[in-house]
Image (cartoon, rainbow, N blue to C red; front, side, top):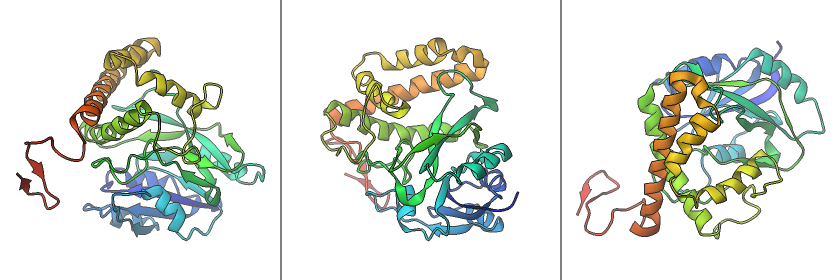
Length: 310
């Protein structure tokens, strides 16, 4: 396949285990940017060995995070950008479809479905598939929404659960991208510990009536809208329900047939239930105990240089 006029954006930090397979799947693109956050492993060396352009991103703790900063500042040579995480792969079949899709002048972007692999197995049930993500779009017409969670520390410098707001018509591609993380469960749990900080702030904002969020900055909640808008509508109800960790397990493992994924499906459902519990206790801390950013009164904290504060 000849090179396609597509610029790939890969956010990265210490991803030496995943980057080789990811980059190997991106050879049809004629430009690849790896936006790195001061990796201490071989990520930069690996990226450059595949011909990628490496750019360093220094997060100041405020908006924008890595992907929006990249969309605003990188000198893309192409109109179309494809955003790919280090643990994702673009298949040859998907590339063939992308080559045709970008020629359609009526569309500003496309959703791509993901197959998520967990413990070496495709998680086909439990509500994890389909998993649509707006990843291919004309870069001048799309930006990630701001959900006003950047003030919470230890959530990372990259947009993870935020969605792209795009001006123009969007479509859906038929072929899937693959989500395969070569790292072990320690990294999954560590990552979701950070994500639960972010989710707790989102829950808190929803319970407070989204008072900090402008309607032009986010994708709104609408039961009769697209899949993202429906999820936002249901989430406003979800945050007010009791027994959410138990409900998360029942919905994932039983109602959405997660048990059909065997042992991997059971472990995945249990971990999601644990994740929901973490969100709940951090939400309690936010609403009644102060802030996730600082210790409660009388408790020791950690200063910026890593020392124990009184």
